[in-house]
Length: 120
Image (cartoon, rainbow, N blue to C red; front, side, top):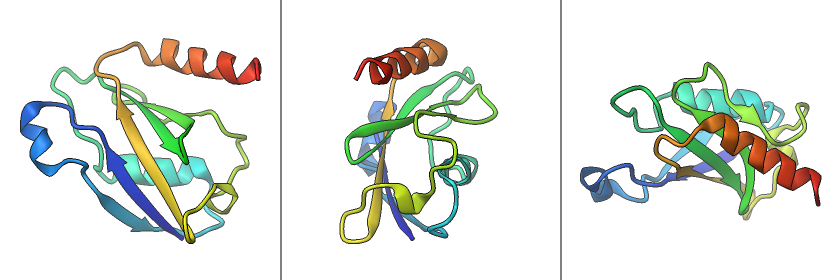
């Protein structure tokens, strides 16, 4: 399954390549967790000096995970068993966008997103 990637810029010098487009071909049955890990560990996100950066991963405009440079793995907002095939597509392509939150506390971001979903 094709996963189209974009991310926010992290600094003025990073703006040159915005919107930082990339794509990955991953198995449709791959879990969302494995797919996010693959993208993050593959070096797609910018590394921030000081080792702390927070990102919200969105798919079709909805937050599906929080990623933090200082964490070993992302924290999902989707059911654990979710696969890429379960995500919305645009002509068969999953579109992910990483929203950069600078050094905001990723735990607070995750908890805020999780509690707002619970209230829906």
